[in-house]
Structures are given as C-alpha cells and as structure tokens.
Image 1 (cartoon, rainbow, N blue to C red):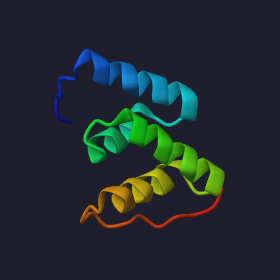
Image 2: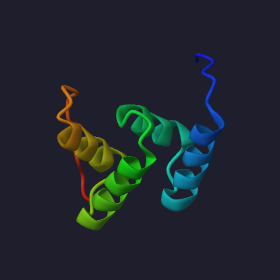
Image 3: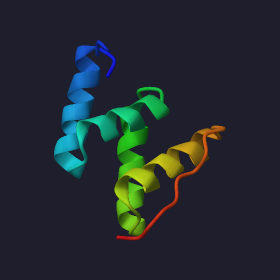
Amino acid sequence: MSSITLAPEEVAAIELLVGKFSLPPDRIQALLELSNGDHILTESALLVASEMGYDPFAGAHNYIVDILHLPDERLPQQTT
C-alpha cells in the first residue's frame, strides 16, 4: 500500500462523506480521486446512487464517469 499525503481539506471531505454514507474511507477516497477532489460532485453521486437504489460505490462511480465523460469503465451496478 502506498503512502499518500492528503491535504487537510481532503481528509475533512473523506471524514464527512464516510460519516454520511457509511462507506469505507478507501472507497470515498477512490470516488474523490475520480472526481478530481470535487467533494460536492462525490456527495451528489452518492445521493443519486442511494435514491436510485444502486450499490453506493458502483452507482456513485458510474455517475461520476457519466457526468465527467471519463474514459473509465463503468462498474456493474446492483440494486440494494
């Protein structure tokens, strides 16, 4: 596992989102990295995934990929 130094605002964003969405910190960090550190987009993606009944991580990941038109592959989604 690599040692990554996070800025205080990144740590605060991760802690906020972990508390709100009950996802492990590494999953939140992966979503934040995918959204280029945009915690508003990450939170919106998690809310959309929740409202649509999708798996929180996969749904949020796919939402961010779609919104930012990223070349990343979409993850399989399962409803909860």
